[in-house]
Image (cartoon, rainbow, N blue to C red; front, side):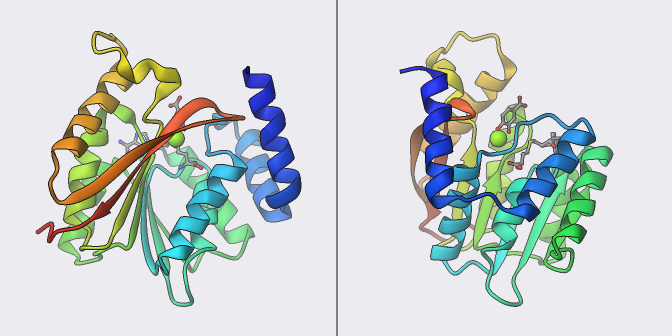
Length: 225
Ligand code: SAH
Ligand code: DHB
Ligand code: MG
């Protein structure tokens, strides 16, 4: 087994179940043309997020880490009529590309992008009473994941689902002595997740066109407030 096989199988899955989509393709093309790093979720992962949000009947979604808005579009397509996605992005260029993408696909009225460091936006969102969110996707900078999880809990209700990307990191997550700040950030998040009695959680390892990584999945069971 090797990354070439994982990518070929992702293409096979895409050919069957995640067919090429002009709107998502255009968003990816615009992101690439603007020089954004190609680190968005893969098509099958984007559809997985879409399916999970849709299965839950999500109407109010929070995303931390927009990039060009690829995962945001998948999530926005999952919300029932009148639903909204709030997405947080620190980088002004990424935000501009994402906003153009949302307008192009006709989702600008569904998606609210907040520019600025997520740790600045999250307290404002809480103060505005914008929550609770039904579905929260954490996918920004990894050293701060544990803090994003704290905010996700504050902005949730029993039954809310919290998903976090990039928790396996090619298996690097089991290296307790790693000097990689991303791995240490994920490890701190994982320990925080494990210690949190108000959620029921697991992690799933994934392979595909994005290599070897994984998602954390949690459902809020208790009253987080
Ligand atoms: N969810 C996107 C990928 C996000 S990549 C997708 O799958 O399509 C991570 C993004 O988080 C980058 O755009 C980066 O600029 C942003 N980011 C990094 N640090 C951040 C912070 N402190 N607050 C908000 N966004 C941040
Ligand atoms: C990176 C960030 C991500 O969210 C991801 O899915 C892959 C890579 C990164 O910062 O390199
Ligand atoms: Mg990611």
